[in-house]
Image (cartoon, rainbow, N blue to C red; front, side, top):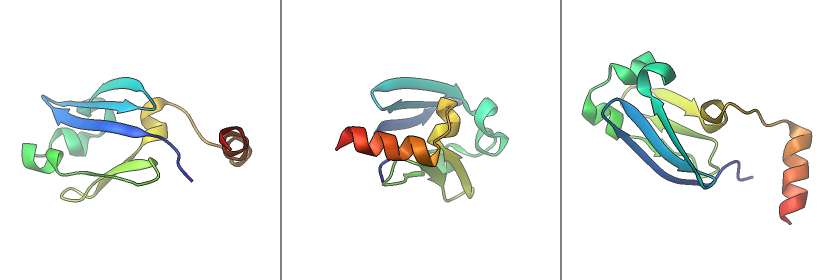
Length: 88
């Protein structure tokens, strides 16, 4: 199941900048994660986006952030089934 279409992710100048589902998002790392905010530039720049678009993982600091959390939404099973049905 594909949760989100994560088109780009960039971490720079203390900000997480992304395009998700065609929407541009910019959030301060301080607001997202103190661990990421205090990480080195190398640690911040090394991340993996899940294939399903569910989240982002920073392996060097062992931090995970959900895309839903960044967008301020939650997926419910019935909503997921409805979205899947609408996309088919």
